[in-house]
Length: 325
Image (cartoon, rainbow, N blue to C red):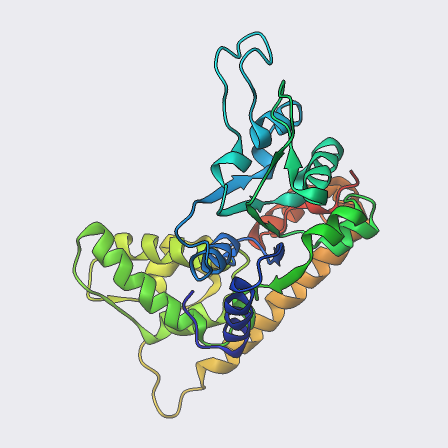
């Protein structure tokens, strides 16, 4: 996890400390902040580093298969069960089971997970005697579980179980000049990935990168850098390449090297950052009022639904986190 800002260094210090505490950890952070990377940092700096790290996206597990996916099944458990099949908990024995998007679990899934966490016991579907799991549970969410509990969308008792230790990963906009450090790193990585020549950032591009709000955080930055590199031809990448890689940069004017009597670009960057921060905060409050309903939010704000949808996409705001369960 690259970064020199105080925000990311504080988060990393917590991760290293948690590596020595063999209990559940809850990681919260916006989309693209590196929650799985943080979970891996805990795992691979802990005594469990030589055992499996098993990631699972809770939102991808059908409600009817939750027990089978987590705990596996015995032979004959159902019609097509011709052989026993281990579950994710079995695969993670002695290691770490990483539950990403844990907030997307249904009521049944939450009950199933809660029952397992109470004593680490489980039974495969169609199984007999209970088994004991030695897997460490690390859960992650971009929704904010405390808010989900208050809205009645997530069980409070399960929140308590998962939240033994807690860390919040800061969004990229709170990480000072880590944006520039990461942009240079990803530019080198892009050159190595496609086998191309080394390139440098232009000053105008660096100003635009610093000013952007980064709704998709580090993941968005990595993707934009790759597209800008592939789309560029010369030794330097400027705003023009950024605009081609990401339409959100279309409002940023390309400019040559600043002369001594020209205004400092940092003012424009700060202004753009303030506008984007206001937009995101306003949209978040609006979606909370409308319980995630875009049409209702459009009526409340006096905005066309299509335009509101574009703004939500621009800032990486997912409506499902505001919807009642």
